[in-house]
Length: 355
Image: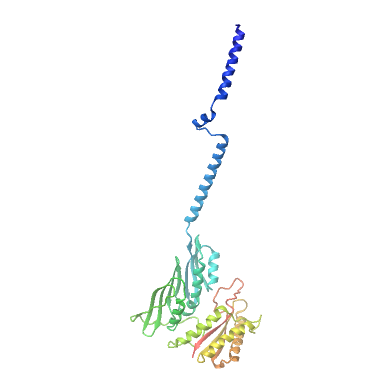
């Protein structure tokens, strides 16, 4: 056999061996034994890793968010010179203004701000119920504070006759309330120091060693002070009238002292209470906001107070029992806006003077 034939034969044999190897080789076993991954499997694995990283990042974000514990606002309301000043710790100025407006605060104090100080709407509603007795019953330097969701009412009542009335109001408060209230009486002070829970009432702890403090309210809304021995009936009558005015306001026709038809019905309700208690005298007090001239505001408030007094007299109230005083802008119960306007400050009050 020639050399060329031998070479051709060897080449053919080589090709046969290669072909046999290619078709007989177990690729699946080879890939499995060597832990190799196909292109599609690699792609799926990369996608899975990306998804896992996203989920892990999201969980870290949520965990970080949950770690920022939301806290309630802190609040201190203090009576100074017959008006209520508000200090506190809030999340932002907008929250502070919202609380200021809802509670009808008279004066801004010192505000501080801290993230995650949320407004507890339910707590705020209950505090709003306390504002009327806090403004009307308590002397200067009394305080209503909210600290870490704990509400504390402390201070001295202007008159001992307010105690039973305050007891009734506090019994309806649906939040835990701690009190430290001094009730002036002849020769003693009743110190109330009790944690009020739902449907709780005031318990007196008499202290015979404490002297009586004479409290003079700097906001004199009457020329005839209430005597210390006035019956608690006076307070009940005043509260009955205040409850009516809490939801119904005395309104007048635009730029006049003519009472609107709806408000005449309100005056009739008040007249019925006065007719049922014929021994008490009453002052009709007119108030305005600070927009316009002070002298004009005083005249407007006087005209409107006189108009209401005339209606009371027409409804059977003896004219000797009724007086009308216009205070103008002198005694605001809320802060006017930048233009001196305040719907709340434009009001008529009914103050029981005694017998």
